[in-house]
Length: 503
Ligand SMILES: Cc1cc2nc3c(=O)[nH]c(=O)nc-3n(C[C@H](O)[C@H](O)[C@H](O)COP(=O)(O)OP(=O)(O)OC[C@H]3O[C@@H](n4cnc5c(N)ncnc54)[C@H](O)[C@@H]3O)c2cc1C
Image: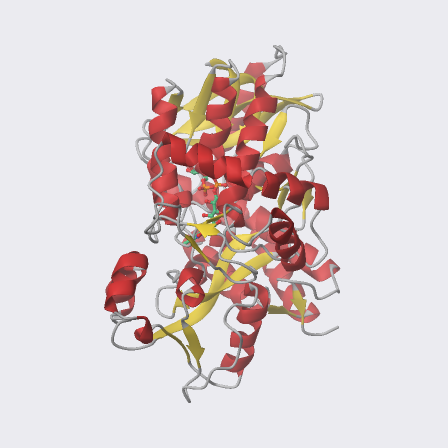
């Protein structure tokens, strides 16, 4: 298959880029390893930031973002994002996103941690779901082509120029190629490295970042992993910042408050971590907000708490813990969203676009994916036609790798290795990191990577082989894990989400 713009990933970033590219006159194919409506964007609860009315100003939004980023964001990039925010909301509103409204019909806004004003526009606590499904409907109206259940294997790069990608068709086990004038990666982050210690969906395995890295793209800030303060204790399912924004209190076992709940996430998570280290259990108390408010503003969070923790937040405080939530690091991009590889763009959580620095502000990720998604799509659509020298060589190389994997009889269980890596990451590359601990993590990664011939797949069928896909994700996770732990070891300065406990 051939197209002008190939977009890999159908979350909010991929769909925004695809829509902008199509509206700029390009033919577009969007590929996803699942279905567009299941992309992780649908899990976002709290809201999307924009200055719309009242006393708040764009200057405040920029200042809050830079402060939260702890000096590691780029002012010009932050300015672009914040200045375009009101238009992004107006556009989402115009295509049908059902934002919650105030009595006078304005778009309702709530305050999230680290924000000086109520700035997050929301749709109850289903904000990401409503945005994602509306973008998907709109993309379908534009006749954008979708190829679902296709897993990105490798990017096709010749002489430093990206010319397409190779995919596994999960439905039939065949390799497919899509060549293009430009490629936009929008494959999401890597928080699922932490497995059950993460709020993320299974899909957040860092595949696009790993493929870009193998192809020679520069990565940036990989050590910065944001831990969200309030995930449910047993399942790590998120209870959004909107609960604290509305007045939710964090309590220890003695029912004492121990932190200002509306500080940025890195600070609140650290305070919880330190409290837990003293043996305290931590609870989020929203009982005082009342049934009417909770059912209207936080209905999903109540359902999730009942379903996964067996606790009704109307009746009693919720047991919580911090969990890996958002990865600030990713593929280094410039203001155009182009990576260090020509014609390879990256956007959304897989990219490092210099707006989140050491700690993302709640509500800025949904904003980034829409604003920068449009920029990526428009720029990708401008690239002239290119030609490919040797497509078959790329296919043969991917085919050979798959044949070797299918021929192996596994001696070790990669699911166990994946879980061990996640446990090590949570314990030793989590909220507080130390040199010896990080070295232990790196030694484990080296040991597993050095004995990969012992790992493999038990299921050798071709159709819908999830064992195979899980294995591909596992190899990507190992590569990403190494970049994260190495960057954490090299960075001896505690800043934002990266805290060293030994220097
Ligand atoms: C529980 C939760 C709540 C959140 N709440 C908020 C919030 O209130 N406000 C806010 O601003 N942010 C929030 N975030 C963060 C925000 O939702 C994400 O950062 C953002 O949605 C990421 O969008 P994306 O398009 O970059 O990636 P995703 O939505 O993760 O989409 C990635 C896409 O890439 C595809 N893909 C991945 N690998 C491959 C592969 N190998 N081959 C083919 N396709 C692939 C996936 O199938 C998917 O379609 C929240 C996150 C979580 C987990």
